[in-house]
Length: 179
Image 1 (cartoon, rainbow, N blue to C red):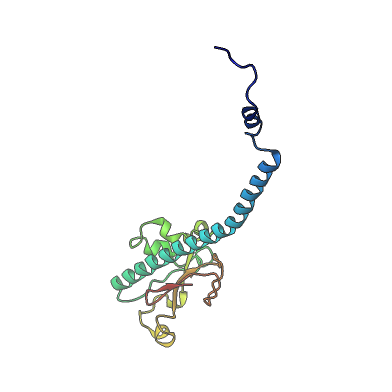
Image 2: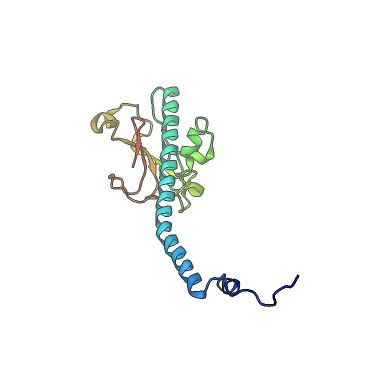
């Protein structure tokens, strides 16, 4: 059997054309970079909304803890410091509610990048106008329990959704949460 020394013309052409050119590779890289640039802002917004949802869940749990505290203390809200580092005479929110909410992560807003959790023991502030007052008291009767804030973020941790509280999430005296 005799083997040809040269490959047929069709085979040689196929071997030369099997790689990508530099221009083709650059075009593919540019398309991938463009798609990544379009997706990153959407992913960033989704992460911010996930942090907001986790914060709302924490506030809901803490409002239930306040209700349990009040049910054991003659329907009175706790008396806590607005900011424990400033108001040293009153206990921290976390210390008062610890027996009702034992998970330390409930007191931390996932968007708290300013260190309130570390300094104050919580990322959330209790409405000090309610300190030691009875549930369904004068403040709630005038404003309405569905509009009286009980707990809220220390600062505007979240993007402003246009709900009236800036970037703060709020737990109201009726147990509802919102922004």
